[in-house]
Length: 311
Length: 311
Image 1 (cartoon, each protein chain N blue to C red):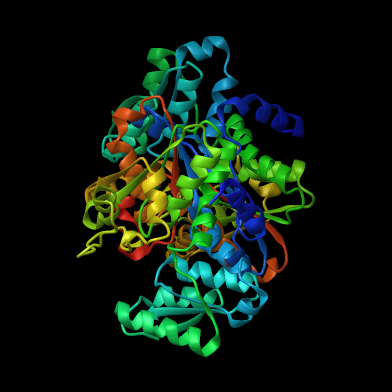
Image 2: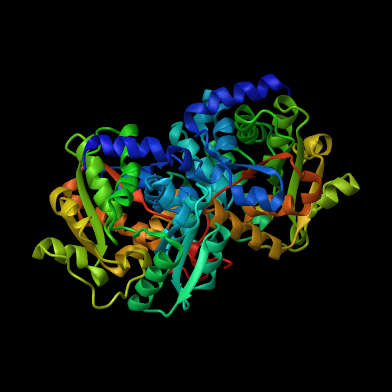
């Protein structure tokens, strides 16, 4: 991956995404003794950064591939992102989702024009069902995080943030499937001035932390975290980028996540997902290192169920 | 009040306030069949539009008056607004608050440098205590809503919105003490192109609705509403402006308020107070009239207790 590919990607997807606003808070700066810049991807179309990677992946298909549509398995933000991107680009999107997924997520996909395909709630069924759609419709499978085009797309959020604040010392993101942090690390490498990238990850799903230690992709045996966007694991496309360009993965407790989420809601007056709060929670963990530093934080998304908030 | 006074006021307070962002939502536009422009005063300093009026009122004092400080009685956003404005301008602010007020509100005032004076939780005690401070310290009493300088200051939010979107057909605000809607009505009159102003008010505290009907200031016998910022009543300074320049007051139920608040949180991804949601709830009530119209909505504030949300 070189710099020009990220520049081209950003130019390509620009008509389909928002250049989201950056918020600051005097109080949060005082608390951390740093200067924090929150890149608000909760204000992105469909409510999360995933829109960027999904749009880029579809736009890179050939006309023939576009005719067959795209397919993914996700019950999270990528399902909505692929649906809305496909709709915007006049392409069919098949979304494989476990039948047990919340009704609100199924409705969101349909609302964005996605074709919902339900399957048994296990990985084997999801993969088999996706394969059937590839066979039957000639659809192209697009992975939510382990795909070069998706990784490049996710990196454009950091590129925009560095265009607005070129001298950031650090960039913090949450770590789930690895697409966001890999794209961010590439963007920080290409466009930052010695900007270090740090990932925040819940102790409960610390596969990325362990993967960096062991040098191979580790998995989670349980996924008992509020940060429902971070239950996925790294893949062979994003892991090498993370190994090369990410400074550190910092683990946080569930209590850290709730406290950081509350601060974001109360002080920035924005609605974010628990997964987004993991990045700010990691900032507090590294506070000693960050004194008087300029720190970018990606608020990854804002799709949260208001009926089951942790406070 | 003439146009020039509002222009001068805006110029004066500019260093002490944010020109807050305006948000839009494709889905909310589709739902209402109108074009909605949300002026986000929840992102204002201290989290509400009240900062504008408080800053203007203090800045209009003589140097001698400033030396004596300012005093108000409020347990809501004006207490914080006067404290922060006074701190920014190097003036003392005495805030009279009932001893029964929530600890978080007392702490917020102290956090912004206000001098907290507790009193018995009734109107007589609040007024007597305020008068004592006027006598003792030579402080100037500033009313949260029934004050020409406060009214002018509150009008600057609408002025900014019309500078960004000059051809708004309607402007909706919540109605509490009347400062915001009176200032908004003046700004719409001076700077709008036939922009009509409509207030939203809970049925439970419909004093403004009844006042416009009867032609005199009415009071509420009970204040059983979620919209805790709207429990106050109109005053002799703002009522004549409202009579002259406000098109209509629309009443909404508590259910309407919760539904509108939920839409704002879920769709705009912002944290707002129940009082702010009253304006959007009123838009839904008037939906028939608003088809294809450009409608400004003032999101009045974002200071809300996350531990007691209505959903």
